[in-house]
Length: 140
Image (tube, rainbow, N blue to C red; front, top):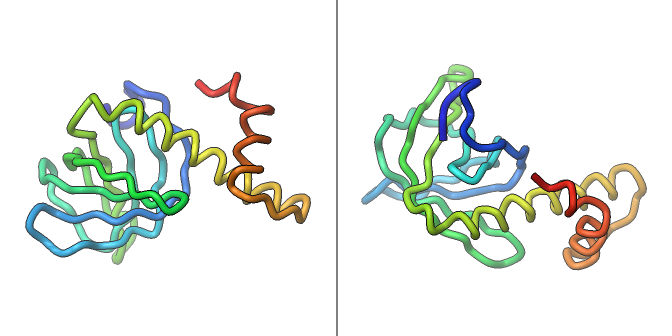
């Protein structure tokens, strides 16, 4: 994952809650991811995290935990009480799993958008089916 305008991977907007734990430290909760890509993700936290520190990140989607080890690339203060953090995934073998998480993020956003705009409450399966039919071919 490269920083700023020199992005190596396409960023996908995301709003998925996650947990992170510094190695040998208690688990913390981040409100949600900011964005996610094949190489890493960014999220907002309440504490400053040191660059090069290692985390285990857990994302719970549809009652399944996805865990990945990641290294902090950058941490920037957003306010007096929050920081945006960017991490790189440790293992390139997680690429397929990350790709699935990216798609699930889009499906979850679609599900919320349909409810907000149309008042339809879709199940996870219904949302996935509709999203795949409408948008899967355009997924980068």
